Image (cartoon, rainbow, N blue to C red; front, top):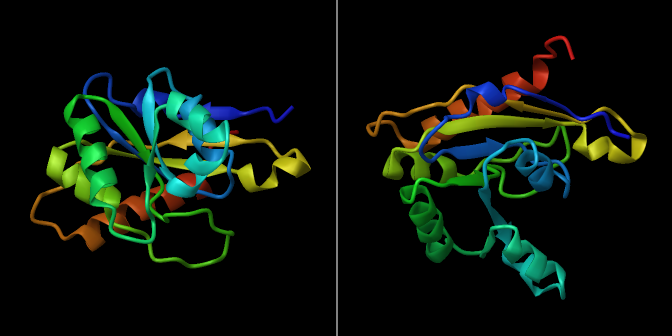
Length: 176
């Protein structure tokens, strides 16, 4: 129905951990990204979702773990670090929440911090048209090249580089 087009999966590291850093426009984004690759990933989700009967249980079964967005949730951050140290992968949304196109929001530095502290590369991801699902627009998921960062760079600078790559992926229409 949505004719999902996935591109750039060849950019995903074959071995070891990595951080998927994606834009976030709709509730469909986590499963769209997760089902676009052939490797299990872990999801960071706002804690309120885990309080919804049945849905919270489904999230846990799908490798999601809660984060308290209202505080600097050290427990969720440590959990993500442990997952990466085990050689597994994590999906994060640097904007911290869904956003409407055209709105400007200062992204969070979590992906940058996780990358520097664990040595895991960041793979930028663009999800396109997920906010237009009810218009039946073609859904696109694009994976960029893995990014490694110098530990001397500040987190704001790294986060800005990640967000620029996500924006490039969103704008580059390839041939799809």
